[in-house]
Length: 385
Image 1 (spheres, rainbow, N blue to C red):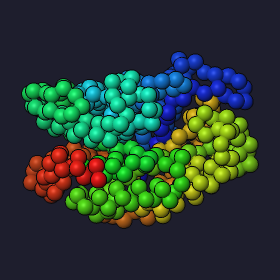
Image 2: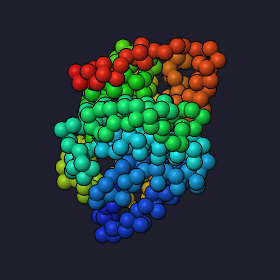
Image 3: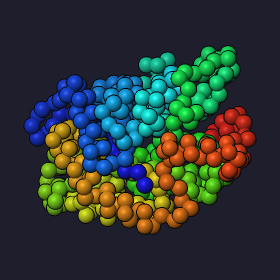
Image 4: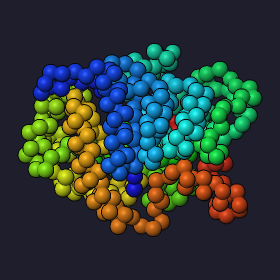
């Protein structure tokens, strides 16, 4: 099981000091956080994509991730998310293949529609086309990565005639894709159709909703012939704040929670912690809560935590990483490994996918799945249902 962190890159005033970091400070802090994540033994660092204040998350995530790649050796670099709706698939194909080469394969993506409505007209799109854009753009992106000569036409962009995206994916293996969604069954359907990963960023949602979305994806993954439902590739989001004892954790985090732009001045910290995965307490409380997530969604492959938001200073975030990597993740990893059946796969990596590709090329392993034989038009119809 992979463990990591994701950032939304918010630039938020620290309510305890009144200090607001500059964009420069927030950007440099993000790189420091990514490097620390590798240092403490985490597997994944992921960044969101934003195009508006109050966020300093990259408008073009490969820029940040390339910088982190140059300063790290092992950690997987991902997005959380890449906007498949408003980004051009040609640009995505080229940028992330280039990043894949720079990072020696330590790259995957999380595709999403985005949660900021105005971003659509900023890029000449209509939010009412959100699902259609997600389906069509991703179908084209896959072709650009798997075919060297692409002739294509669709509804939402100009046609392509004999186009070759460069550079080609490293070792002929495109980055693995997760489809991130909170509330859209169509996106769970899309992930299942292609046999890709499904990431439910459930940081604002009750477990009952998360359980329903993951179960839908698992059923459809099996329907499309990629394996049994429990072999589907699932990721979850989470939020934690920890101190040695729970009273200190709650006392320290409360002003950040109460004033955070995303959930401040709403439900109480206690209510939010009860209804969502937010866990504010001791490391043992976090271990117990996150070790139990699989009881709701089945054995899953990736757990990402949001820990650098709401105005928390860099020093505090780095302390949280020390606790996460030193005390929490080793225990949850051990519990997850002990309970996972042998037939449930690990999270895909470039190395594992390259090995699988070479096995198939050598005549070992399964042939094309039923899903691969289904036309893109059929997939669009399935997703629209």
